[in-house]
Length: 424
Image (cartoon, rainbow, N blue to C red; front, side, top):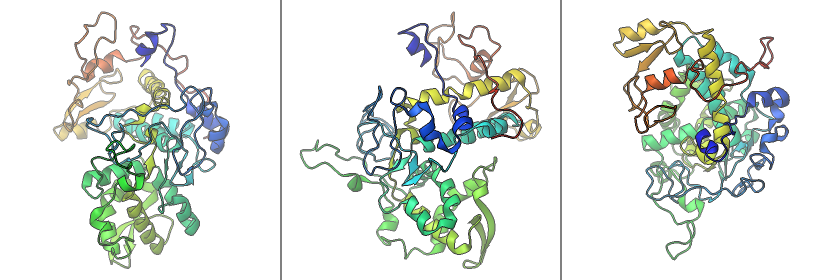
């Protein structure tokens, strides 16, 4: 991205939005307080679900088109380049800091100094990645992007009906995008292959409701889900709830706990802070919500977030934190490395410039994960051959903040406003 900008003006550097500053200055009033959402910057999002499109209508990014390609490997039924589960037919970029009517404005804070301190306290690279990926990064996608037009599955209305469940529902809204992807992958959620957004087939255009993903195996026999017993609801949700419970950095595990279910006479994962009846009700609501996804903002979908210009300035914020950790190596140890080696997995040490500082774990799960595998990047530094792809090892070494061949340096990578006096 920076090289693309510099092809127009060589004096330009890649900007980044330090949202931890906005958190420190504005707290829960970040939506109205930060300049980022003004028309002169990245455009005003709709404060709440407008029931329609939540388009950006002012500024340089007003009515920014969402790319379409019906032959793309990941797209929705309308051909929009977004997650398959997101059958949002909108042609233009939209945002709303809310999920299914539940507003984040005034309810939550942007990731701030607490997240910075948590990442710095990580004892190994795996924990550092998890804290940055989820606590410092992932929440931002849902807070800013949002989900709307959820029909009868309104989180706001459910909170009004069951106010004691507000905290749990708030936590669940931040990961519904991951739940929808998991439900699609498991086969519970089924999405149409093709829909007509503008009468292209010489008939009437398909409405969002006509094209919305669903769970046909459940909808057919239990339209209101009342006849689906609690045991089946738990079986369907258990893989996703278990993922929350086993969250190693406790961000989502604090929402659930193991407890005794007097109805099933079994130990299950229950929602923390509410009684059993409320847990059973929330499970049923969550299942219905997962089976009928609303319109998801581009920024809130992992595969399509790059369609929103905010993606580039938010993701550039993680690099100074990583540079700081690599330059200072203040918290990292070799804890856990021996256990990994004993499992027989491939381990390469020295990512932070010290032989025993941290391990790169070759998991073999996906192409491109291993230390010596190449990634689709070449010619990033002067003198490097164009077309000769870099390995992970080469990129890790070349991107070290001490490498004078890098074309940039951060003026302050320490997040100096995040003092250790206990402030968030």
